[in-house]
Length: 105
Image 1 (cartoon, rainbow, N blue to C red):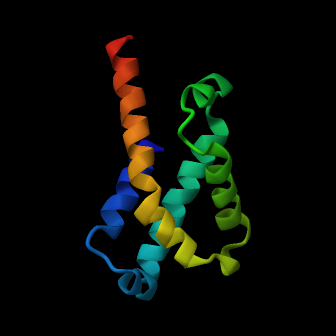
Image 2 (cartoon, rainbow, N blue to C red):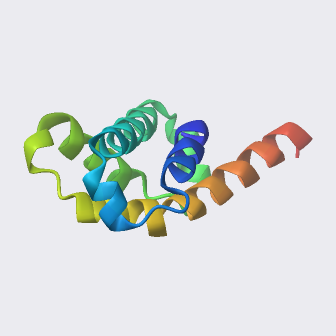
Image 3 (tube, rainbow, N blue to C red):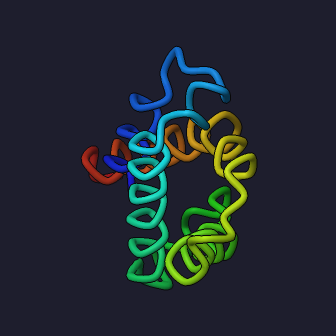
């Protein structure tokens, strides 16, 4: 999840919505990585999910399902909003989680 989120942030760095919209490769890459995040959220243990209370796993899984099963109807304004509003907090939460795990606390 962390690596995919970081990649998406890199893909959209210094990109406007119009540039994102006009670049099908960028839209596809972001959609793929959001699917990876969602698939990872499906595989996470219940214990880990409970410890990460600030991560909206249900919504992450739902977005993955929309991308995977309804590609032609994806609202890329929503995808864009996720890249702009939701990924940085996700990265922050996951980085803190892994730092805590590495420290053994």
